[in-house]
Length: 101
Image (cartoon, rainbow, N blue to C red; front, side, top):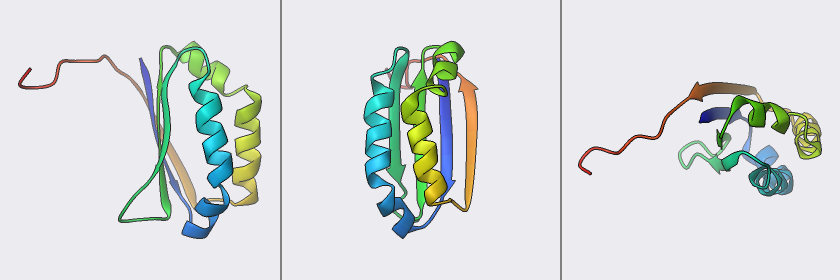
């Protein structure tokens, strides 16, 4: 499994302006082949910080995701409300049994 953890530093106002684009990106991405999860969240203690968590079955599925029309639409919306910074970290992971189970 490929896990993506991204942090987008923005402003509360810009995040509000991106709300529709974010919702559309989540819905469309979750429908893609190989996507297990695709979620945006706003940090409670830092409301200008968006976190993106993605889980993909393979690097190939993630690579296809970057070519999708909804990715281009989201990138255009983000460009209209440029963030202060974007950081993304990619991991290859295996699901494990949590402690105590």
